Image (cartoon, rainbow, N blue to C red; front, side, top):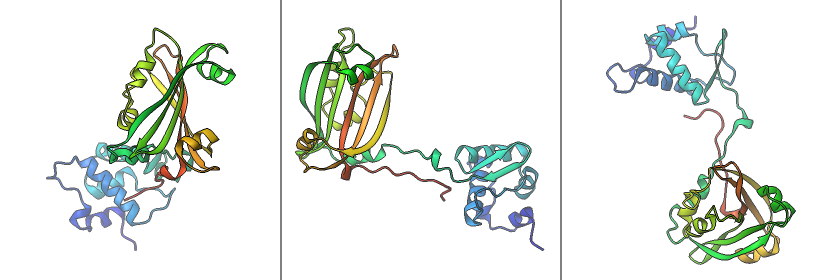
Length: 258
């Protein structure tokens, strides 16, 4: 006869039991132990965990402790709960995978020589696309700012953006103050913006972009298109970063890891 969950837990080595003398809260220990059991015993996605009463008996803890531990695992994406049915190992959900720009930060975390060079600043009449993005009338004046991010004299990023031309928003002065890659990533020039939307896409560089980044065409690139809004909820800046495809990677982890 196979041992019950409680019998199995009571016979496990101390490493797999609750340490009552530890500073770590009991529910955190229990959550970690359950996570370890899911991984070590190879529980598959969709398989059910022991009931609340079984866990209470197995680890000699209260119902509240079990609920807090399960809640922690839910927040970590390890399990899901179904009211009246129980707790289950979470299924892989590729649609919920999230990617960050950490690699972009890492790319320059050690590059103390990375600088931002202003290439050009000029007044430009908004064409139909610029007008649509900035919610202004076609033909209105905008400020076009172009800059290049370089490290050790090697061009890596090209940035082109269009700013609302408004004397009440000293955006240009704020943007021109950004002269380092670290400052650009930390948003030091964006204190006038409330929030922004960023879209990442892949494509082929244009002739001008390839020339500025000193690569031969055709050349693949990542395009990070941004649209920043002011505190009045109106668009203030629209543009994009062009990054060489060999300098940026997007990585994430799905499923349950140790």
